[in-house]
Amino acid sequence: MENPSAQKLINKIQVNLFKNGFEAETLVADLKKLREYSLEENNPVLTKALRLTYEHIEANGAFLIPIPDDEPIEGEELITDSTAAATENNLESLEYLVSLFSDLTHKNNLSDLREYNKALQEF
Image (cartoon, rainbow, N blue to C red; front, side, top):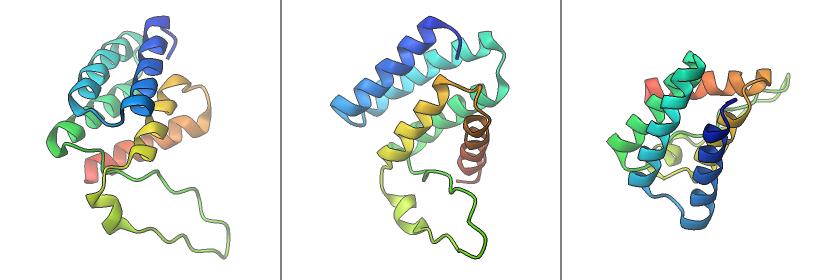
């Protein structure tokens, strides 16, 4: 995100997650505020990701989406434990998602954000 206030808010979210852990109420309020900045920047992928994220947290009281898998290396198969991912608060994944908000100029960040959007919609 380009807006300095949005960058400060992203940093605040990251620090809160690190210091205080998962606090759904605070996190949802911050994500809603961050979405307002995203609307101003006219970034539909980010705006959707923010909305889906806070709606998911409101509905589940946790963040239950795993980090998107990297593309498998040819000949290798990725194994994921989807049952654990669906029942445990996944702070590592949430921290990664929030880090994506900072810089969407990298192609991989935008791609991962789209993967999160897809996973949040399918949840």
